[in-house]
Image 1: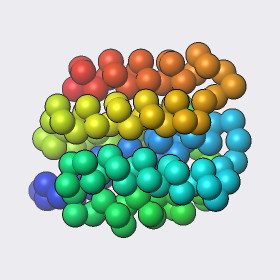
Image 2 (image 1 turned 90 degrees about the horizontal axis):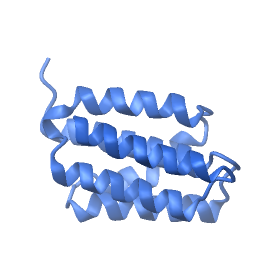
Image 3 (image 1 turned 45 degrees about the vertical axis):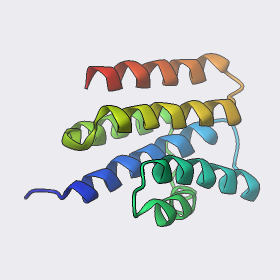
Length: 131
């Protein structure tokens, strides 16, 4: 079954939201204000690319993911799998947006273990460049 281009982009941005949320809450639970700020970062990322699903995506991600309790490494592996499955839509613009957004999340929601934030961003950059 062939997945539509928009559906693939939605899956890619869902993966972005999942990784962003996982990185943001690595050390702590997110407050309502944190979730709103994270939603805005995700909205900015999707809107920058003029995706029709941007607003619903950005608003739903923190609510859906609040229930999930996966660690950053498990989440990262699932995200990478999703990106590979939607490789046709993973162009340079989307990759750049992905890296930029996760970079903003890392800066806004720093982990007590600075190395883990640097590592996730470096891994993402390397893996996206290899796709």
